[in-house]
Image (tube, rainbow, N blue to C red):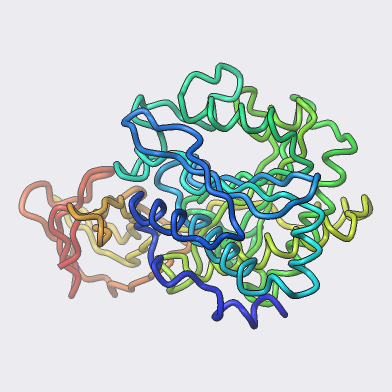
Length: 385
Ligand SMILES: [Zn+2]
């Protein structure tokens, strides 16, 4: 609550959407006050500078990185909000304690080439989150050498997840999903998992007021080459935050605020000493489900030859930034046709049994940029007219 109230006073105004240019990250980093130490810690495959930003003089290290996957930028905004908070409230009890006890190291946008191209992978098409054993991408080398150097007490791996996810059996979007990753196939527990799960339970409490019921738990299936899994295997405590969508918030700015609140609460709890007593609360957070489409058009009548079928169309938008990286262009693809009564649309339209019409096939096609009309809706090459 207290963090939510002051958020408006620290939100970084130069970031207002998910399309964050590397030049903005660079400019914001280099224009921070003397309270921060900025280092160029390496370059991406295509030569873009990767920065670390440090705050604090303490011996205990906390490391956070965002945009390991290029097209997952929500937490990058939250990082700059947190830096503004440290700067503005430096004299306050919490920040002065954090500054004395800890050194925070932030890497905003670990994969700038992927951000520019709006892809998950880097410029060599390597998924940095599956490069934790081989460590072959230059961006992975930067991250892992910093991990070894700092030996952080806690680390935070900040991602975005797709719009498909809901919370458990509910109709709520998974706006934030947390994970304390497994370190082996059997998903065994150890002290580090107990502590990270207990910390996540506290972070969950902190964001429930902003996004009630919209917090899920990501699968802890073991991924042998993934970052969090290998961090836990090697004895580093790591928390994964997946930013998702929230109704009527396509740019995920509410999600960004939830990241700010969750991370600040985590810092506070780590500073007070995380008690290993909340594993049950972690396990009560519902698992992510996969109920959502970006758009469902219900009750569409498809007439072909002698048959008439009333179906629902489940549509996802493929996103692509425009040329100058200022606006997101959505390209609609039909991904499921039939009885979608068990699914939800972020947007739902009832076609009231109006006829599906297109110029060529006369029936809906899966997984290509859609071109059709039904009722008042017209989609041409994936673009809603
Ligand atoms: Zn990711």
